[in-house]
Image 1 (cartoon, rainbow, N blue to C red):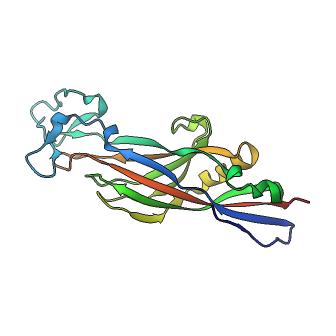
Image 2 (cartoon, helix red, strand yellow):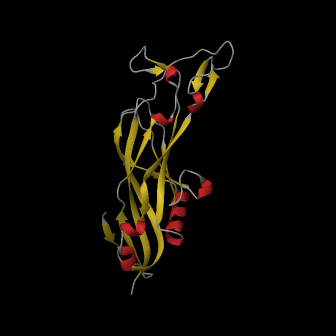
Image 3 (cartoon, rainbow, N blue to C red):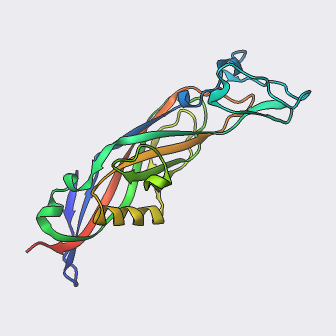
Length: 227
């Protein structure tokens, strides 16, 4: 954790800047649940089998098809887009990460995420990945559910199959403001989640592999110096 103390403001406030530890997550195609009978191994790499449905307009039942819905589109069975979620790291305690918050500031007016950097550490996916959305929620949240007080924090851009690298997440202004209010007025402990959508097409790559990424948040806390 890197920590820095900014200059005292004219209104008697000051700010402390620090970064969180790396919060990692993994998104796997195992969550898609595409039946193996829709796997076509006649080409390398394997593709999604094109199942004809032109005559009936209905896709035949497939073993294990509870994992993904199939719809007859253009005469072939097309897997519906599937949402894949995963927890990001463990519970994050912002106060524990910077004990100086308690030692230096008697009152805290805001705790703001100023930027979020990500690194794709491992990517064995055979498919391109759509945007990855990152959410924050209370410590007790177990899934991405607005009813549980879960908000979007930011979005990572699409990632090509097998690609790795670093970048900066596009932060969501409303979600960031809600996080600041929560950290100041309710609790310093929150957890994060990641979500993406996987949209497959007949004849396209069969989904295999996973992606592992880490996120580091830059944080600024503003408050008044303890006497």
